[in-house]
Amino acid sequence: MTDKVARADKVALITGVTGQDGAYLAQLLLDKGYIVHGVKRRSSSFNTERVDDIYVDPHEAGARFFLHYGDLTDATNLIRLVQETQPGEIYNLGAQSHVQVSFETPEYTANADALGTLRLLEAIRILGLEKSVRFYQASTSELYGKVAETPQHENTPFRPRSPYAAAKLYAYWITVNYRQAYGLFAANGILFNHEGPTRGETFVTRKITRAVAAIHHGLQDALYLGNLDARRDWGHARDYVEGMWRILQHDEPDDFVLATGDAHSVREFVELAFTETGRTIRWQGEGVDEVGVDQASGTVLVRVDPRYFRPTEVDALVGDASKARSRLGWSTTVTFRDLVAEMVKADLARAAGGTWRNGHST
Ligand code: NDP
Ligand code: GDR
Image (tube, rainbow, N blue to C red; front, side, top):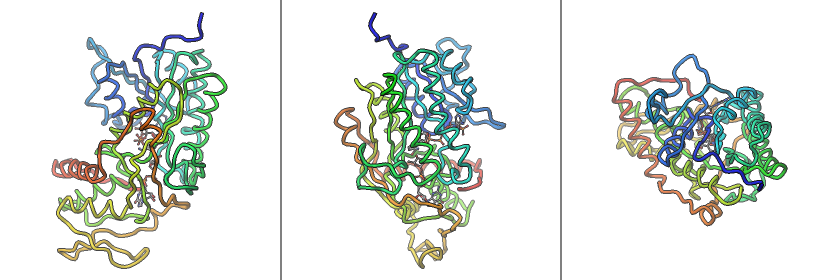
C-alpha cells in the first residue's frame, strides 16, 4: 500500500464561511463543482448575509452547500466536523480578523486565531487524515509588521506589530511545522489586503466607501478616520480566493505571497472614493487637526479622530507575488481604481435602497 490516499473528491470545509473571503471562496468552489461545508458561529442575530444567495435548503435534491455550527475555540466541535464532513480540502479562514480590535481582545484573538489553527490541525491528525487532507491557512501581510524590506516576499522576516499579527505568526509556523513533522499538505497564503463590496464595515476601505455613499445621500455629515498616511497593497477579494484554491492544487505544499505589488495611502483611497460621487477633496491643516474639505462647497467631510490610531501601527505594506505568478499562474485582475469604484457603487446602491444602518465604527 502506498502512503498516498485519494483525497475526498472535491469536498471542502471552510471555517469563516460567513466572512468576506469565506463567501467568495464558497461560491468559487461551488462553481468548480465542489461540495462545500461551511462553519458558522452561533449568533443572536442573522450572520449569514454573505452566503444567503448561495444557500439552498439541504433537503433539496442536488444541494452542495451545507452550513454547520462551530467555533475555532471548541476542539471537540472541530474534530466532529472534520469527521462528519470528510473533506479533501480545509480552508481555515475563520479568525478575529480586526487588527485594532485585537488590542482590546488579545486573549480571545490568540485563542481563535493561533490556537484555533492548532485545534484544526490536531483534528486532522487525531482522525488520521494527514495523507488525505490539504490544509490552507489564512496568513497575512500583517506578519511583516515593522517591515524589514520592501516589497515583502516569502523570505522577508516577520516582525508582528499587534496581538492579531502575533497570533497569526503562531498559526503560520504551526502550519509549517505540521507540514514538516507529519507530512501534511499544509500551506500558508500570505495575503495582502483584499477588499470588495462585502468587506466588513469596520475595515478602512469599506468604512470610507460607506461614508462616501452616506454623505452623498445626506445620511451622514462627515467621515472620521485615524492614520491617513498608512499605505496598503489593496486588491480584490475575488482574485485572492482564486489564489487560495491554486495554492491547494499545487504539486507541493508551500507558502505563497498574494499581492498586487501596488500600494496606496488611506488618503488616496479617500480622494478617489469621493471623486466617484463627483466631489474633490482638498486637505487642510496638520496632524489631528487635518481635515478633508469638499472643494466645491467648502464643507468639511473628513476629520481625524485619534481614537482610530493604533498603539503600534504598520505604516506601509506592499507585496511581491512573483512566486505565485510563476508557480501558480496567479495574477490580479482588478485595478485599485476599479476596486474603489466598485465598492462606492455598491454602497451608493445600498444607501439609496432605504435600508441603511449606521454601525459602531472601528
Ligand atoms: P472576516 O472578518 O470578514 O471573516 C472572518 C470569519 O471568521 C467570519 O466568518 C467570522 O464569523 C469567523 N470567525 C471569527 N471568529 C471565529 C471563531 N472563534 N470560530 C469560528 N469562526 C470565527 O475576514 P476576511 O474574510 O476578510 O478574512 C478571512 C481570513 O483571512 C481571516 O483569517 C483574516 O485574518 C485573513 N486575512 C484577511 C485579509 C483581508 O485583507 N481580508 C488579508 C490577509 C489575511 P462571523 O461572521 O460570525 O463574525
Ligand atoms: P488592516 O486593515 O489593519 O490592514 O488589516 P484596516 O482596513 O483595518 O486598516 C488599514 C490601515 O488603515 C488605517 N486606518 C484605519 N483603519 C480602520 N479600520 N479604521 C479607521 O478609521 C482607520 N483610519 C486609518 C489603519 O491604521 C491601517 O494602517 C486587514 C485585515 O483584513 C486583516 O485581517 C488582514 O490580515 C490585513 O488586512 C492584511
